[in-house]
Amino acid sequence: MSAEPAVPVDITILDKEYRVACPANERESLERSARHLDAKMREIRHTGKVIGNDRVAVMAAINITHELLQLRAGQPRALPDDAVSATLDAEALRHRIQETLDRCKPGKTGLI
Image (cartoon, rainbow, N blue to C red; front, side, top):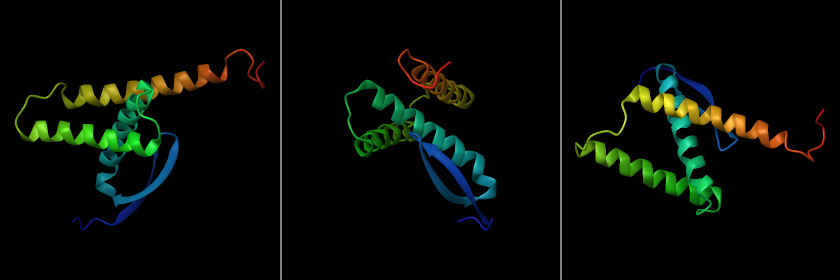
């Protein structure tokens, strides 16, 4: 356990806001973890095979745990850390673009 004082950090997962306390020096890691979880959950939800956020969360947890156990077993990583980070940032950007496009579809009210 860290002696660093905890600070509140706001994270968003599947468009839902959460406030989590963590040591200040771990904030960036927590935010990166939240983006990773959000991307995994969106990927699972996008397949349409899993319905309900609770089930999506469980499947994401299983997938992430599987990846972790593979790493611990010494199996090679698919991507280096910077590539994973770039992939997560790209996924978040893709999601924002898709949301904007969805709001701009013909028939939506409030558009110019």
